[in-house]
Image 1: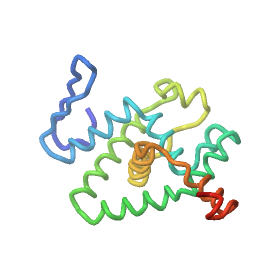
Image 2: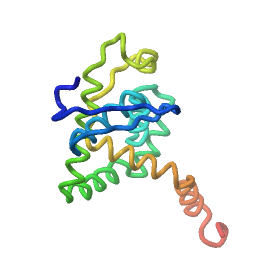
Image 3: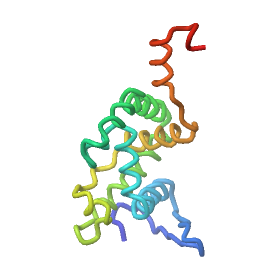
Length: 168
């Protein structure tokens, strides 16, 4: 039983292993959503937020520096900060994100080396504390991924090199 919960919470996994969370209040519901999501996908969540922020090279080394530069050029951290500022203007949304963050961190804090996801052991690093900014980075990573991609940077550079007439 998690001491942060205000009331009993039940998590039921269906035949497809999809968790269904039943809670008596919203705070416990979103806390548990963070906990269960981290339990199932912590490494993926963290890896994607590192990717979004242009920090993959901290985990995998020099081979990710060009990717990190591109992500930083896109301004993903600024976009996530702006999204978080917008979310925080609504007290309900702010509370949801905070409860979710606390749930993710409760799971992270429950880990020992033995229970740590394999990927952390393989890559020799520890999960960082989850923050509301990481939730916003994940949101921005997903939005960027779902836009279908683009080659704006390459096209901008080609336009500058070739000029309007030759580019078109």
